[in-house]
Image 1 (cartoon, rainbow, N blue to C red):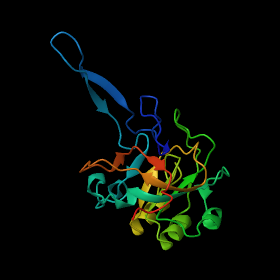
Image 2: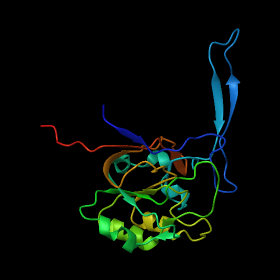
Image 3: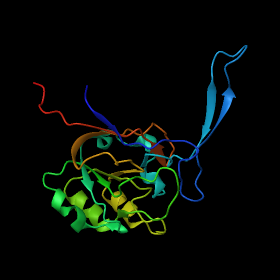
Image 4: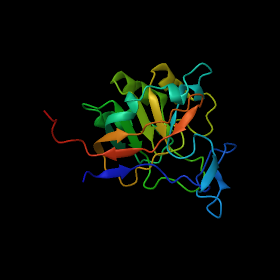
Length: 214
């Protein structure tokens, strides 16, 4: 059986969110019992809880919503790069040594253990210049194991504006703890949320096939 790396954090009431964002909550609309054959729950949450794909609508007033994005960037060959220096930004120099024959998707692991249970504003983000470098090499999607590709206190969101300028896609809040650096197949499809500014994804990696079927 082909190995699968699940790179999505658990989604529950304990999942951290940006201060002021809507956390996950759940209540039961119906429960199993006399006269009721099923359990049915009601879920309330920001689409930025857990592993998610930002849509251009998140950072552009006239940007596309999550459910209107083409799916091709979210599935295909992917490179995982380790950049666990603990600094605020991933710079071009950090990734340049790992970009030979880079595929169209790049995920960056920034920490030994992803922070899946508590909010912290101290995390590593992308420098906008790094986004530009990846775009110039044909990268369509970037992702990382932190809440945002910009620092938590950023007001102008230069890396989000860079992916808007280059029409790139982004995944945030991934869990890359057990993923070695190297090339994989990424599958992280957003839901068809037609008016949403982001979408949860169940992101996974698989080993690339060793040969192409005839």
